[in-house]
Length: 446
Image (tube, rainbow, N blue to C red; front, top):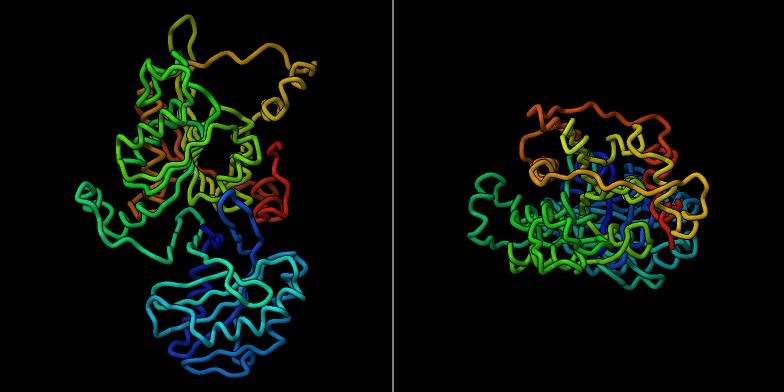
């Protein structure tokens, strides 16, 4: 699926401004950088333009024709950014709009100019109605090449709009609907969620998201089940030792719900081919314990505007006795701090994780190996449940404003943390990786 993604409240502001003059049609344009996922495009909007009265050649309740000068201004920005240009207009009297024959004729006339003045592309068009939208990509002849099925607005509250919807809701979700409403349950059924790391915390995420009714899960992990995993990987048994974790957890998800769509990927998110699968997701859960993989996922979240829920659990023990335990759940989205804003990621550990095994062995600054950390299934489960609940508050409207939680399991406390973005952050800073899509390098490897 192809997605158009806006930061903060930009989508709502654009739609409101365009529909403000209803029943007159309105028009404008926006610029989007392109991110290429494994299955579709993620078009990250960086600027928008709404026409004033003087920008129209013709305007009525059934037509809105822009002056060439207005389009030329937007094309100049698209050319300078090597980005996509979308022309947008309204069908203010339609609830769920469709492109008209007149729209198609206009696209055929303007498309050669779009591609000659801003050859980067791909370019497209969007129409807003009272409730829904229609969007599509066009080629240099104005022919439709692909639909854009999803609009996202990412911030501490995430808004996702699908071009189509599912009407019927299975009776198994009756108790969900009583809490989230029918609209919330339908949204869950259409979501594509990525889970990176399906071990101690990730396996809980698979179980809970499957039973909530999430439509599709992409599971990423390059490890096999070991006997030491059986104390905390939900759904695993001794018969699974030696099997890829993603295959075992895919079976766990299917036991929870037979109709769930699953994409198990046995590979490392440090590899570009694997990591690009996250660009196709609506939301990502980071359940890995590697600094390198966390750094890559954090950058993808900021660079491609993929809402991220990061889960971390630490247990300190000495001589077989627990001396302390902490948990952390943090959402990363536009306007929120990213994982690089605070001293959470170790630069040395990130560097080590991104090196090849041969380079790691040859590096004089890397000594020894990482000691396996203590892990307790109940603490993993509590942290993951807090993350899934945060996900519901951010996307489904469940009451709750906390976007960063720190827990002290042994004390029985969880508190909301203040987590403001750091000015000039190399990842989420507005002049750095933020919203850059494919125009900015990611630290993944080939």
